[in-house]
Amino acid sequence: MKYQARASSRRPSSLGYAILGLLAARPWTGYEIGRLFAETPIAIYSSSPGSIYPAIKGLRAAGLVERAPHPDNPDSSKRVFAITPRGRAALRDWLAAPVAREDVRRNMQDLMLRFAFMSGNLPEAAIIRFLKDLKRETEAHIEALEAHAEQMRAAAPLSGVLALQAGIDGYRKTARWAQRALDAFVAGARAPQKTPPEKTS
Amino acid sequence: MKYQARASSRRPSSLGYAILGLLAARPWTGYEIGRLFAETPIAIYSSSPGSIYPAIKGLRAAGLVERAPHPDNPDSSKRVFAITPRGRAALRDWLAAPVAREDVRRNMQDLMLRFAFMSGNLPEAAIIRFLKDLKRETEAHIEALEAHAEQMRAAAPLSGVLALQAGIDGYRKTARWAQRALDAFVAGARAPQKTPPEKTS
DNA sequence: GTATGCATGTAATACGTTACATGATTGT
DNA sequence: ACAATCATGTAACGTATTACATGCATAC
Image 1: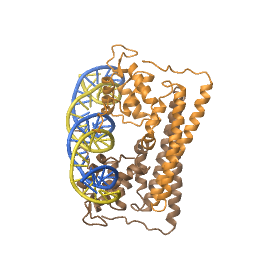
Image 2 (image 1 turned 90 degrees about the horizontal axis):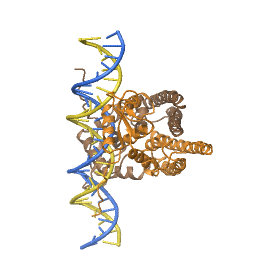
Image 3 (image 1 turned 90 degrees about the vertical axis):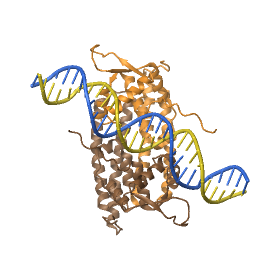
Image 4 (image 1 turned 45 degrees about the vertical axis):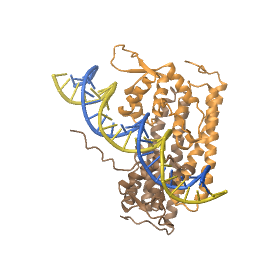
């Protein structure tokens, strides 16, 4: 009785959202996305067709992306995909979700991926809020890690203690980065800048 | 004809190796491991029984861990597990594997997990080699990222550029940390210190 | 005209997660 | 005696990965 209904699980995976974020800028083919993941150093996903194409298929089934005509040659056999209005809405919802402590702890990459796609898809105010939340949650996590480090410093072996230190250092860097990014955005917000509309669907 | 045989895939997952690393220090029950993942801020894995118990099962099937008597009460129904000699060998192989560029790019957490378990399981020389390799590979990756950042700086939106900067900052921090850890280990190596035997199995 | 790379997929597999289930201990 | 927590699992599901497969275009 205390069990709740199965999560409908229609939400895209991180890879799905990454593809959605790319398509928000311009149409792509699956192959292009794979090449981006293979050749640019930023991509954190596998470039194999076995991950890309099924992910696109899922997004299509959910109505978040659709086939688009080839920009140059309308008769090309290449399968170009574009984001739909519903896709844009789903992307925005994902981008605008609150910063969960659990994501800070285990999925920082997802948070950075979200941030990377925010420009042009979220109003500046929401981006600034995200950065403030990220900074706050990261600093809270640092405190928890340090309290834990204090306890374990005596008992744990050297490499264990150093590894934890590396984790703490990384979060400190993230917190400082968030502050600098905040500065950059606040400075940019003062200058006139095109802000995306709040609703597109 | 150019296809090679399917990877026998008997190797544990990251979670499996994490459990193996814990058991290398002392016997644990599955429940204790779950609590560690749930309550300490360091754990990057799910604490749910659905991940822990199947992972232990797999390690048992592979002969890497085995049931051990309860340290206090031999008749306890608690299922305490200990690492086997083959388990120690598998752990050592994993710890001693070269630092792959691909891991630096996509699985830094695995590398840090490996490092965390090195003390007591690898000779100092191997740990120092790992840190040197990690530093070198990380710095190489930073160069690739910076070259890419140079290209994209003009075209990409602000949040995308900043996110990439966050990635680069993180790797810089890692490289500097590796140097400091190296110093700590070299300093420790000068002092008399117990070095684990090269072979245990 | 055929080799090479472009381009798009499917099948089998492994794994982690969520939800579900249940027995054993311990405190009151 | 009963509740709460300790403790150990299984089943269904989704997804990423690897291996496999194949059609199309272009260069030579």
